[in-house]
Length: 290
Image (cartoon, rainbow, N blue to C red):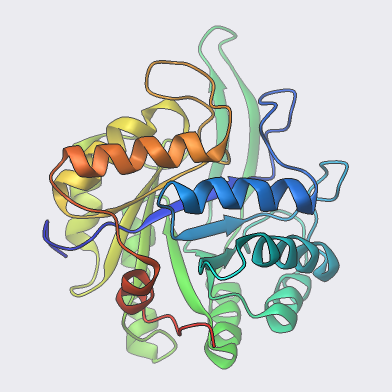
């Protein structure tokens, strides 16, 4: 990748942890997801990363909830194309259930976490972890997910929380279960993962296999510094209410569209341009919707 490449702007529309108590703009119902998708696309986002929720806001890994949200987004966008990306990362949900919604609905892209880790949130004021879990992603599960994605024609998005996760790509390529073009995202800012600095991002990028498309996922308010670093290094970016609730000045975002608009402005200020959906599909090797 180079600075001449267009920037794929992805939006993580709603995660599985934060809710409306933390940010009133987080969507719960399919109609709310659809309204957010319209704001995202209108501001230049070309890929939408989806964690499903039930209408009461609780996370869901059921086919019907992913279907309802995706159908509502497609209906709202009408003739406007967008790349649909499903999460497969979770704790305590059987692998078969995660593969079931991929098999039934066949999104364009599916996120694939590339290694196990301690996943935590630390409070300096309390001197304690306010959230912690072991995020298990063993190689046998990674391979099973990859084999399902290969069978279904779904492009994996390799979410790497540390340099070791990037290093896990090469054996899978050698095994033949992973083939170019790769789509790699460096996830930074999670306690237990790599610290969120521009130098660490550059180190991760140096270890990504040649020819791969890569981007950054910055967690919390460090997101904007990491967006700037990725744009300078030639990468793409992800923003959205799953990852960060605030604009650079500390104002809480009123929609995913506000976050995407700022990412697009930063892209243009860096002398680069946002990719169109057609360009993003070509860069990622994702088929065009018939």
